[in-house]
Image 1 (tube, one colour):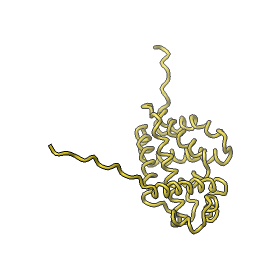
Image 2 (cartoon, helix red, strand yellow):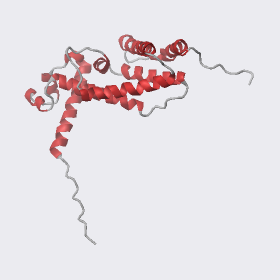
Image 3 (cartoon, one colour):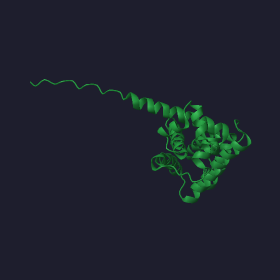
Image 4 (cartoon, helix red, strand yellow):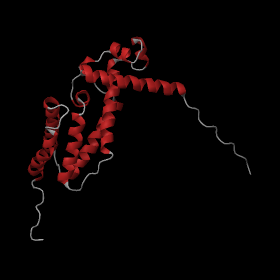
Length: 209
């Protein structure tokens, strides 16, 4: 019987690991600067200073400011995608709509800079890379599948839904940042939407049962 030699364990690429760790440190610092100075206030010089690095060394990790934005765009969409994982979507369409609305509005209300980067065209000439945009498409597909299952049937339904939840989110950020003034309106807003679009109200209790 032929003997077999155990395969040698794959060595860890320490240089790559250090590179990726530094890259993540830069992105974490970039988020902090965006939240402090606004989405258009990002300076590569200030970012390099925040991570104790010479400005020219930053280009070892990111080719341009738009490359930083692109990685942040991907990070933000990955975080939103992760919010879908732990939730359970009810078979009841009204509850499903409430769940998705709460997920989106609370996510947006957490972070003004992230909201602007992911959902508004605030940065002149910035377009996410195909790789980063693919994550956003996956987020859209997850939400779209839930809404379709809940009974939204055409483009007008989806447009109205988008306007509803985006309006609640933007009002929350603009008028009660850190609070819940408009978050508390989610259930009422969804009830009105469901009555209009689905053409029916929540089932009434049978008092004769």
